[in-house]
Amino acid sequence: MASSRILIVGAGPAGVRCAETLVRHGLRPTLIDENRRDGGQIYRRQPDGFQRDYRTLYGSEADKAKALHDSFDRLRPQLDYYPDTSVWNLSGQRLYAHQHGRPLEFEFDHLLLCTGATDRVMPVQGWQLAGTFSLGGAQIALKHQAVAIGREVVFMGSGPLLYLVASQYLKAGASVAAVLDTSAFSKRLSALPKLLSRAPVTARGSLLLADLLRHGVSLHFGIRPLEVLGSAEHGVSAIRFARADGSISEICCDALALGYHLRPETQLADLAGCAFQFDELSRQWLLQLDELGRTSVPQVYAAGDGARIRGADAAERAGELAAIALLQDLNRGTPELAARQQQLQRELAVLSRFAEGLSEAFPWPARHAAQLSDDTIICRCEMISAGELRRTVQAKGTAEVNRAKAFSRVGMGRCQGRYCAHVGAEVIAAASGEALQKVGRQRGQAPVKPLPISLYAIDDEPAADTVCATEELS
Image (cartoon, rainbow, N blue to C red; front, side):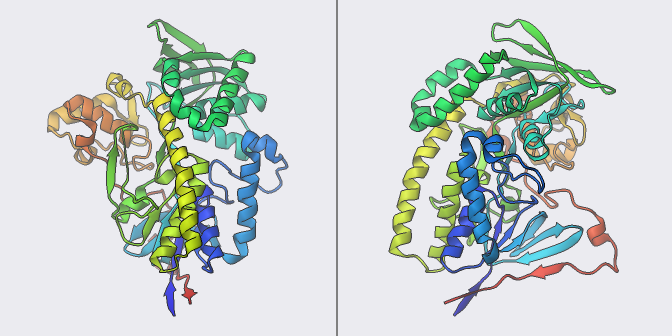
């Protein structure tokens, strides 16, 4: 008889499929999620009392969303489930969180990180004005609260989410003033062989674009963002940008949704001591993983967009694979699991090829970071400009991101570098003349998410509840 404490962080597609696989094989994992309901961002469930149907909420993905939600509802009695629980630290085999003002500590033997992703953002002059949202934030407002971020919305950046959210706003009755894509349309054509590995998905993307055009939405490809116009008093009033031919245009609006695909949420893996490797295509540091999702740290696994940005379909498969890896490590492997592993890996190979095609079709515009004006704010938490960061690099002679952070405070605020660290690294690399991978990555540190200091500041407050979910194994 042996015992093991299994902890899953994240109840999105990867976390739910991971939990489902473990439960199917007789285990009872503990599942922590910072959202009030399961589904993650892509299949976010609406609040109680909202009555929108699946087709309205999820469009072509309605069946997948319902299947995932139904799976979770069946699993729920067999899980130790902690919704609305924010994790802020990890040390050794103990994870620190809080729920409804109550501190919690979770001890674990095996940790599965299904932490998802956040928006990848390239700053533009004026983006600190009220009315600027990330693409993901704009989508959450629509899905979760049934509201638009403005009356006349511009969508700017690159990636499939740009067109998806613009289309969702259009269907919800909002006015889409324009879609401004930094990627040239020719990139999509050159990436077509990889994109056709999922031809129906590519076709649906083309239909989204055609639908926007049919409704008279202004689409511009290969643009360069120049400035968000407006005032501190009234917020966003227009977007100025350079067209592909070099001419300058302005489009009036009262809100901007900004985003360039996604970035993995890896702070907890960083605190666990997991190794990273630089990915040339996406120009990001990604977790070093084996083919099943094992990290470099024994008994720590990662799946979903927190490990690789491949979308919800891949996240479901990667979550199941990570669970299979854990079962193998517990000496619970079976011929059926081995066969299922091979099937999942074949499917994941196709999904990975498609994701690579998306990265080629909608590339991260690294050169724009080097072109940011000196007064463009890089770090909105600390209000540090590109010019201040460049001067820090030159004055201190540092081309390493963590030293530049210490000198400049870029990435030291509430977001802990989620939205500014990768752009800061691009600015440092351009200013110093070093390659991006040479300047390194910003290390994660606790607290990875803002937490109420009252949780631990009052001596007579009760100590944190410690959760030791123990599963007896035969």
